Image 1: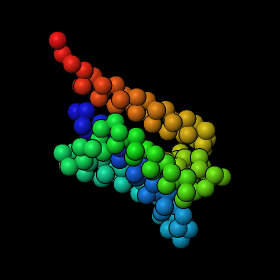
Image 2 (image 1 turned 60 degrees about the horizontal axis):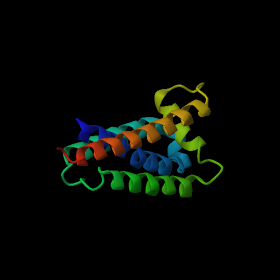
Image 3 (image 1 turned 90 degrees about the vertical axis):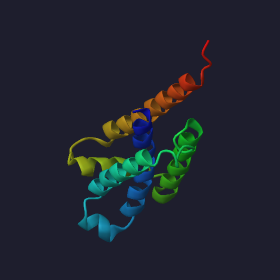
Image 4 (image 1 turned 135 degrees about the horizontal axis):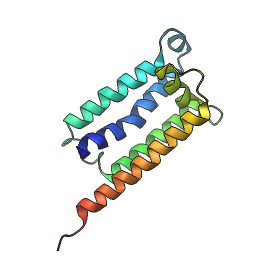
Length: 134
């Protein structure tokens, strides 16, 4: 169960990076709902990471998760720039959910909460697994 949650959590930044890269293609962005592509990529990557978790064991631990967040965050920053850093991921999620009236601030707060609380949960779950038993 924990491996599935780790896979779902680690697939999110990778899918967001791919969605941000696709968002830069104006032709594609005007014709396809990239939010649906983001959610589809997230699901596909989560299934791949979950089923092949023994191959992705380093990615699914705390160091791998931290590296994943940093590398994907840097990639999103380099692709979208400082001005669109917070609007592009929120636009992808808002577009995918079909909630066009939802403010970017709420979506960004949800993303930040998901990333922070998820990382803390994985950190403490990993710490609990490594604790010596008496």
